[in-house]
Length: 377
Image (tube, rainbow, N blue to C red; front, top):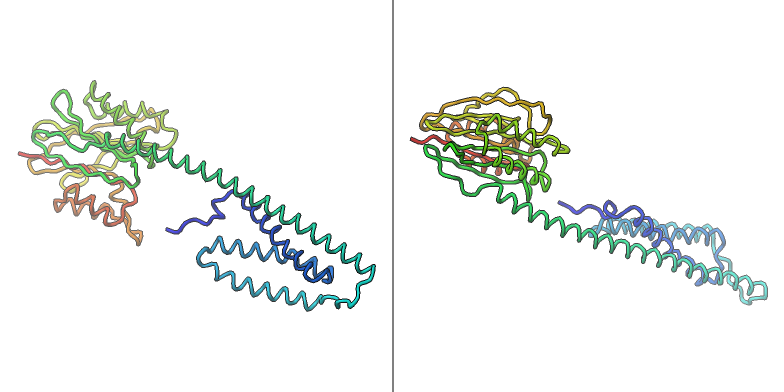
């Protein structure tokens, strides 16, 4: 990806002052040229030549900064135009013939003209220098501030990654009668997807997956809030629908914008499952989508309610929970991976890792999380 043009990143005030500094600095060349000609240029030619030097200098400056290594593509045409313009000025307004002798009146005129040139050169150089010094100081300060903010943000991102590393379990607990597989690939340094496997006091287990809208530090903080609340709420209720109700109540008012989707599966003995959903993608059982009543994501309104559904898995069955970053994986032709391909892969017995890797190879542009629970004998 190419770097943005400096003209889009520098403050407008600094850009204007910088170009004015260039204008005044190179205006001194016009006055110096008049000194070389001993003040014999016609007033119209003199009045036009000074700003022409400055305007062409601005053109060289703008093209050089904008085009960088390809500046020659603009410099050569600008030089030709400048040469032609100055040539026409010399043709239309030729210099007066140089006198063989200088009288008192001509001497006075020459002194006045050269004094004007000298004072103008000093003034233009001082203005140009002052402008360049101002821009140098202001941009140095802005660079220091930007680097300080960048270092602070990097420190916060490191802390957020560490928090998320704790929030996303690396080692899953063993559950009698079930085999659990998980995979997680954030799109950015810190993602908005999350999953948890929580053993309950009753001996049952909660498998939780979710997705916070957005990415980065803000999403990571919401994820940490949800994961912390999950541990607290599941200590006094094991009903997935009630857990979602409490999570929604806690998130409402704490999310200034956005929302979070969440799905909870309670794994019980003999392959029984109890599932509740809050705006998340439905899970797949042996490649077939499990239908649920519509539900709102968490954090939108306190009046949202959630229902739970009971299912039963037989030996060899597998249920897969996904986030939308898998189906929305997009290749260079802007073609989505899509749910049809996901279903065909799951029907063929694909694991969570197979699904995640297929999405990454297709073109990852969002967090990817997959959780697979298989029933064992």
